[in-house]
Length: 168
Image (cartoon, rainbow, N blue to C red):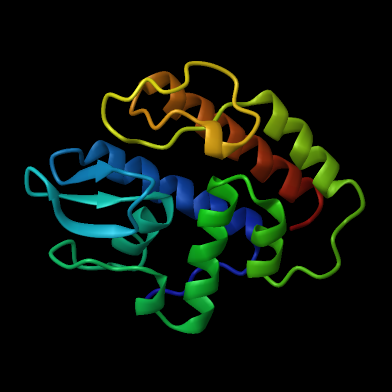
């Protein structure tokens, strides 16, 4: 099994690459941010969240089975949970999951700045619950709309830049 990167920015870069690969394989997968890896979810497709994309991508999980972070070693489990934490917009849990104790001054403020200026996406087909700015992920539309995917990618990419600027 492949080891996930220790550096937070590298972990999120890898997670974005795996998510993009899953999105391009839409005949095999459905993006559902409420499922880790769920076999035979809809029309024989495998449902995956952002961390689930890493499970089936980099970690090579069998899409004919269902998985969650507890199916992996403790180090991998906490990194998968970190991906889920940042997807939900919980920077404190992200930093805790990755065991980052010396938090650079200004990191959280920079994070909250982009958090307030970007909407996020979770995918539940054809839901139009919310069509604009989201203060937090609990209020976010569960949509598979392309514009939400682009906003999510932009937000994660911005956060990766902040992490890299801090050497994380």
